[in-house]
Length: 246
Image 1 (cartoon, rainbow, N blue to C red):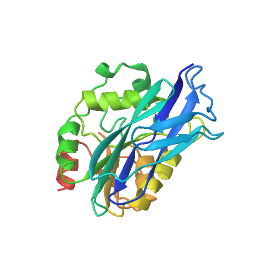
Image 2 (image 1 turned 120 degrees about the horizontal axis):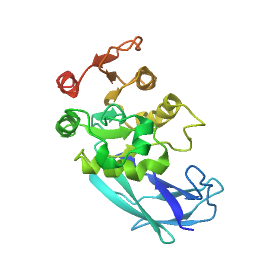
Image 3 (image 1 turned 60 degrees about the vertical axis):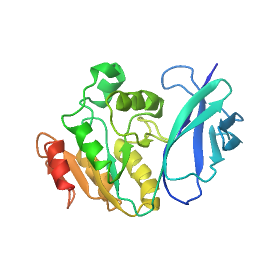
């Protein structure tokens, strides 16, 4: 049975040593994918490593120049792609959620609908394209890691800026709530990037996750949420977000 490969995208400050983490599992059925121990993982042009009991392999990366790098990952006959963006350490970073934030769909709706049926939120593509010219974009979602490829395909289909995608790492939707997952993954970003300009989501819990790391939250919603953390900004549209971040 071909393994399921889940490399974890990275946003790296230039000159920083780094390694690519790759999760390898045996896919028996949806959400039944036990870790595969002892599997050899190769990151093309960088090296190899074997997975441990948790199914994780860590492959050190050779120095990479600034820019977007698409790294080919192999394990046996299975292949996957990791996105690694390298940028100056002083760069501004913008983090955005996906469901009900740039995609006009719920988390459950995304699972059930083919990508062509999932529309973008009005103005999201143009706004992120504009903002991506002066900030490093990161997509942060509580979607399960088994949907990373479908998510990347949707982003590309709709011409969103190419950027690292952070989905669940080491948690599943039944083991950790969305906020807990996002707090953990934002901690990885905050450790490397002091200038995270804003974090965008559609829920108060998104705002709370951003605020937990001192990241200014922006909540996009047709109606004003009842309770938001201090300093959070509520907007109705991406046009408002673009104005706010100018």
